[in-house]
Image 1 (spheres, one colour):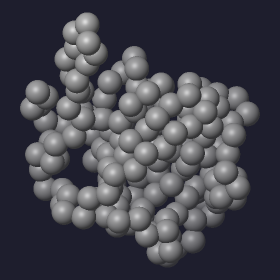
Image 2 (cartoon, helix red, strand yellow):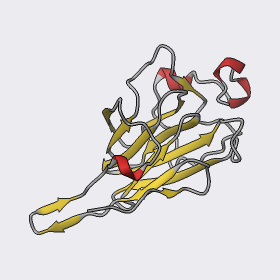
Image 3 (cartoon, helix red, strand yellow):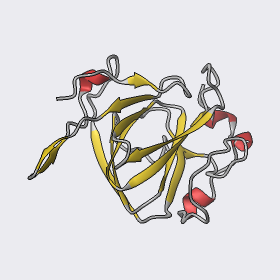
Image 4 (cartoon, one colour):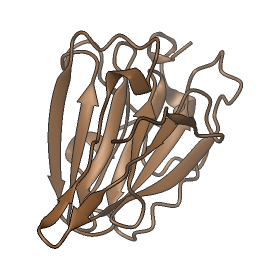
Length: 182
């Protein structure tokens, strides 16, 4: 079993990765994907798990929350996660990064509040994400433009398929003050 703690992702303060260790034989494989103790100090009492299936070329994001952290792992296919630190008090404020996940890089990805996140489906894929608070689209669902030049994320795909909501997200420079993470 994977008992190693989460590891800091140096590009953005508070983001962590967990190396996932598959165990397999001729019948298939087993992999532990989440343990509360990997993230000491995080309140996982209000747990919700979600699944997102995407066709190759889909881009979802960039989204951020004030009251929700995310923990992601790709169960099928390959994704490129894009991250932007929007927390004004963070030492990595406005830093962005991308990390490939899935078949070639079996990791879990921990994303704290105030870090905008999204993913591009590099292949058909399934993403499981665990959150520490129930979905609240009415008061805790924010976004920034996936192609904001200030974020400058290389998504690894051209002409992504986007939802109407994600197409309408503002640039970082246009985030209203009450929607700016501190």
